[in-house]
Length: 180
Image (cartoon, rainbow, N blue to C red):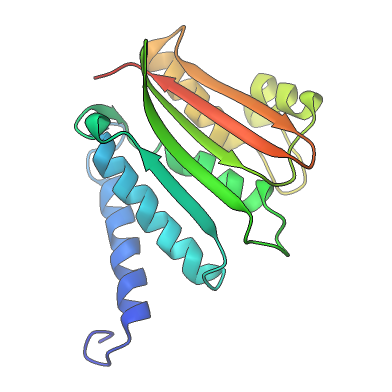
């Protein structure tokens, strides 16, 4: 109906939502190519762009040589979601968020950086150590906790998540995974 009515915005958001849902429900908890994960992340960004009236400034910097390697599905989306909802000033959505993937001596390193509100060292420690018991306003920490647990269960040390943040300067969440 959206295509017939020539309403491209509706068509594009339905396609993005469809891509996201198809990815999530096909073989849950399995591996997916990094390139596919990035496309799903881009679909999520498109949905958020519509929600926020195109005000998000999200840039992707992905090493193309990593696209055919695999990773657990849906590890990046909860981190990007947190950057949007908790990192950015909801009144000034034009702040930059960068999503990067680079080769690392131990595998692949993803980073999601926002230049927004930031967190204290105490908040980071509580988030990483309390997991699902963490509560900050409407934020439960369950997405971050889920990502941490999945990496720990699948790969163990030295792989995992690090958070570096400074109040009023932003947050960098780094995820280290093996090359698969």
